Length: 389
Image (cartoon, rainbow, N blue to C red; front, side, top):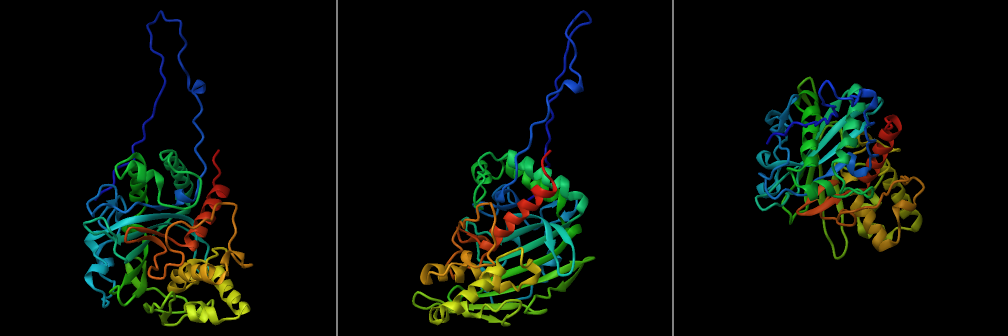
């Protein structure tokens, strides 16, 4: 599907009359000042779209959607994802992939590098009945520093097109949900993405696949892309390989097994088993929660500083600790804090059968605390560097 172009409509005031008219004409200096655009909130920089009713639902970008910078996900890049023992109904399907989330970031930090401005898309396979498969690709597009001020202005304009959005917790985007995929907000959002993102500035793809649901197995991996050449992502604590996660459910509990096992930069092993967490001393439990508090804190670690699996299980295992062990991550000294509402919406907390960070599990919204925290940091960065004048 292809995005529509953003249409800017300009209203001008003019004075018309015959030569004998005594009415003065309106000069530019007399024109009314432009209305001030609204401030940004979490839902303006991290946009979770409603689940499309089918792959053909209007307003949802797909891999072949293209603007002036080319297709969002060329087939040649997608084909680099290796084969896994994943049944088709739960695997990735290029023709069914649709963007279910869009993220804007002015300062994605790579190790030992400065900020990099990005647009990122989350695409998941959509069934004919309007359901999502528990697999996804995460697509990264690099923006120039010169593009960033204009992007922030455009995000504020998009906010003005979605009066349904309240300045509150990160949630399914209320404007898109109310107006639909052909409404003014969706049309402008898609046009913005297609103007700024495409094959020309496509720099990374990560993937997430789920094996048969009865086995509760997931695979993580990714590729960096430079000058059109793909290189396997070097994941912290894992290396240049894919990572497998196995969940063994128990009566009211869980056990996660990582391969390769990650213990850098934080050792999270204690909370990977509910039995281990219950048997731990209070001191050991709080030490493990402190590790996850730092993992979820974008001021402590950028995504490139962290392995995949630890981030993706965080909401489930820390949610279990809060609900069953009265141990709360937000009370840890290294927990992220903000003046913005960091409340967690969706079903990610304590739900061990989904490792989704920002997207959908079936028809249930999944929003991780790390994504909420990152969104708050992005808004603060945008408002500080590019205040509305």
